[in-house]
Image (cartoon, rainbow, N blue to C red):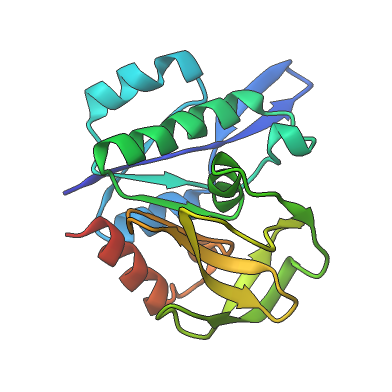
Length: 201
């Protein structure tokens, strides 16, 4: 069974003075149900290389939650960890799936601007595919979006208001969506097929 590492959000618990790494259990279950072994990586930037060397993941997921620090977020250590994971994916041909904040991080890694958008929080809407990506309805939980991408990223789908909802890296090892596949119940078959095509069996 392939090991898939996934990034976690950071929650600030002021009552205890703690910064906690955490994840929605639905994402862990989704990874299991796709046929992979989920492994959480902590937001300790200086230990990323040691973690990867020990776990030897066959895939990476960048999850949702937390704004990027450059856009007002308060989890800069998470930004550092995810940047290292993107670099590792590119350097070692390890497939990476990024959703919501994860897609924003990939866009930012390749110097694409994020914009404030409205009408994308707790909604369902249609997306319109290109480059072989199909039209479909998806969920939406984001207030920042991407309106244009540049090489090496390729647009795959947009919402009717022009916000890019899916993209990939030109070498096909990085795939990104703005929707949360784990928040669909039952899971969408298209999402499971998409993950399995990316990570393989």
